Amino acid sequence: MSYSTLLVEVDSEGIAVVTINRPTKLNALNAEVLADLDDWFTSAATDSAVKGIILTGAGPKAFVAGADISQFKELGPVEGKAFADYGQGVFNKIEGSAKPVVAAVNGFALGGGSELALACHMRVASDNALFGQPEVNLGILPGYGATQRLPRIVGKGIATELILSGNMVNAERAHAIGLVNHVYTSEELLPGARKLIGTIISKAPIAVAFSLEALQYADLPQAEGLQKEADLFGQACGTDDFQEGVDAFLGKRKAVFKGK
Ligand code: COA
Figure 1 (cartoon, rainbow, N blue to C red):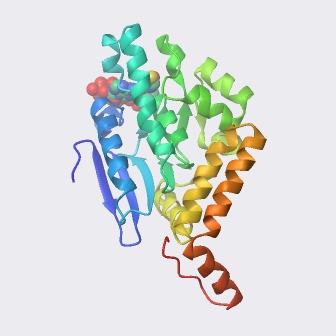
Figure 2 (tube, protein in one colour; figure 1 turned 90 degrees about the horizontal axis):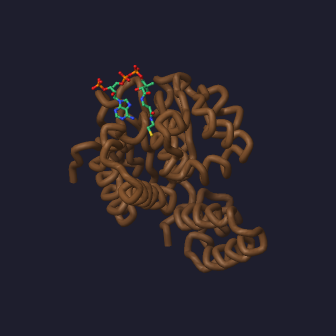
């Protein structure tokens, strides 16, 4: 299936590189991009050819420079709430993916672009990346998740400063505050993201999916989260891959996981 705003390539290993492709508008998120992302992530969930996902932006300048501001003129209170609800729904789907998703941030990640990266499971950046939540400059606040996800990733104090000031942070600072896991040159960004996803998809797929699910419960009160972890641990112990992992270790050989 082809998309008007996305370029998708899936390699033989099962790594899908999904590129948001509106470079002349710095890959700003309009309704079409959100619908395409929603549709692609829905189909990728059941596509056995896709094992891990890299999300990036077309061109040398931007990952995503935000929600498409040209749409904002139409927004009143009712439309604004619907706009935020819809975008949040798409981003929740990305965050809820059972397959690992890495944002490869190759330039501006502003507003909804920063929030899209926050909804991915991990972020890596090129050394020219700039992150920011500039919504206050437009008389609004983030609507696609930054007030909730950013403090969970970088802590409330730093998130508050970023959201209230609209200041951008560069890749070095983003790394220092834990917003990105690794920083690469522009040329090394996709190879670096591939290496990270490649490592993850070589592991037992159900264990990876359950780990992603358990990590989402890190926001629950700890006792509840621990209970969820124990439930998922029990389920993992019922998989063939668990038997295989243990047998392979004890037999001093490499495990061959089947995702069962
Ligand atoms: N929505 C719609 N269009 C956008 C956009 C956005 N969020 N960000 C960039 N664009 C468009 C510009 O309007 C311009 O289009 P044009 O060539 O048809 O005029 C094109 O992308 C290139 O952007 P430009 O502003 O010329 O590039 P720049 O290098 O001078 O500045 C930015 C780059 C990112 C600093 C600047 O584009 C910007 O501030 N964008 C908005 C960021 C923002 O507030 N995002 C949050 C929205 S909630």
